[in-house]
Image (cartoon, rainbow, N blue to C red; front, side, top):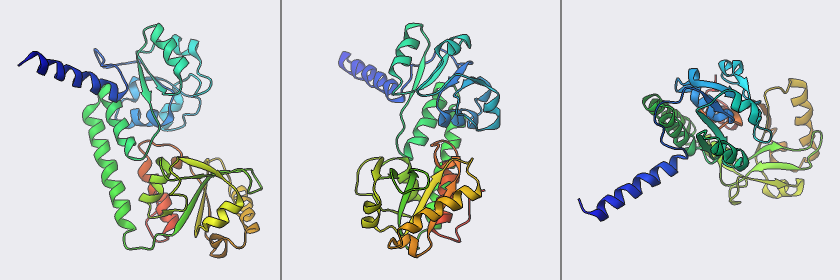
Length: 291
């Protein structure tokens, strides 16, 4: 093999390591800290829960994760607490540049997470599986997720695809400061997988802030408003009633305002199939719901 060929092979190998967002480990890490709930779920789902020693302040699933040490979150990672756990791998957000630099200075390896679209869930599972020595388990999980997402797509084939606005934030009791899913990203991909037509699909951003006037102009036939699981039925009923202040909205006229309080809609992890089934059941009544 020529020197040029060897150089090209080495360059390709180095590039592959950059793509997965982590250094090549000398051995399987045994003291992993995850600051990202989605990746925490991935680690447990591929059988690496016993390798996890710390999680973020917001981790609630699986139940076993709640028994692990808490080390802060995106905006307030507890560096001293992290060090005290003697990790050999820390999973961090790409935006946590200061934390990444501090960990590098003390020689602690990192796995850098980037939030993206639905397809990237499988990519991340494969990458973290490789990083923690669970390649076979990660491959099986990705195959299962892909197959089940395809089953959700098939379940809505042939049905009308209504215009759907997916709202994930607004001021309580009003229709001010609304944030909706737009034409790219995890929520948009979930909505399309579930058989909906994203009312803001032409805006090539993950999310946008919209006014009541903009919502009227888009005329969604279905509105799905998502909240965390700690919302109760009375709170959901009150917030659903707020939409009646826009009687000209097709979704209001057709009584298609849905308040869904479920954490699975917010976490791009192994439970994305449940999230897709939830949305499909709301958009297309009669589709089997998530368990």
